[in-house]
Length: 436
Image (cartoon, rainbow, N blue to C red):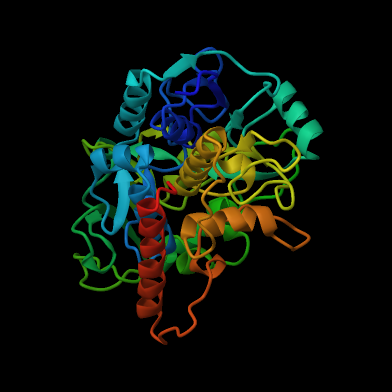
């Protein structure tokens, strides 16, 4: 056993995954988490790995890049995937979890690990010695300033979260249960709109009052979490080709596809809370009640959580972080999570897994295993490390950042399946050779 503990800063998905990977390899960990002493603007729970924006970890099919990434993580012994699988709730072809149950289970597993010591305090400077910084996209204050000194200027963009409503407050005479293309059973609630209802809603949305931003923030928004009101301002039909698209859904009252549909996704195991899909927003709270009340079925909706918008900070990582998220300028200092420039819960957990394994290998006198861009996890690390453009932006995992096939099938699904098969075989080979 290695005597000196590794310090992991932040107990989000990336930090907990990194701590778990270190501990399972016999390396003691000091896990620093500022909750419940201090909360960020986006977090409410006192437990670890809180899911803020959505309870969905997206597609679970390996012919989808994020589904492949999850399967890779399972093969590599991911704590986050184990807890997600144990707390999953119905969501068609997606992996959705009971948010609070998931957070409690991750916390329990971390607390029960004899090699992980939890320290509830805010860290204001990068510690000496081996360290993983996984403080998330809301890193601020003295710690952010210290990170900027070590790595260079931090960038930032805006991120937004969707509201959650109580099912008991919905008018179910106007709402129907169905997943798109009937895939996975009735895992979603659907609020159908005719053309008049849709355009009335869009007019209300584009004219609604938004919450002011802080003076130090600039209006640069990550495309994947674009506020619904910002999308609506791009054109009257933008939403019905985006989050309100009706394809694959049939209103049982008419037997036809509606003009537009607002979908609600189950947010807890009991099915009492629902997230409004694609409705990340920066509207003022009273405006959310008024405008979203124009949606059929949501006229008297009880908002358990309003949508919020906040600044997300991330590093200018290319040429500064290695593909396993180690800072080139300081051996033994790793970063993980959204602060590196990966985007999404699964991607954040993946970076924590890769960083934790790489740190452990360093401390055991080995060179970190190179996953390469044959794998989804390795492709994310390569993107963060080697992006050559002038405008580095956060990235969700896609097949587009993975290495192509020498002889690729023309059919897209077959091509993705072949890429996935190659990736999983590569990870199994590394594991069999002791590289993980």
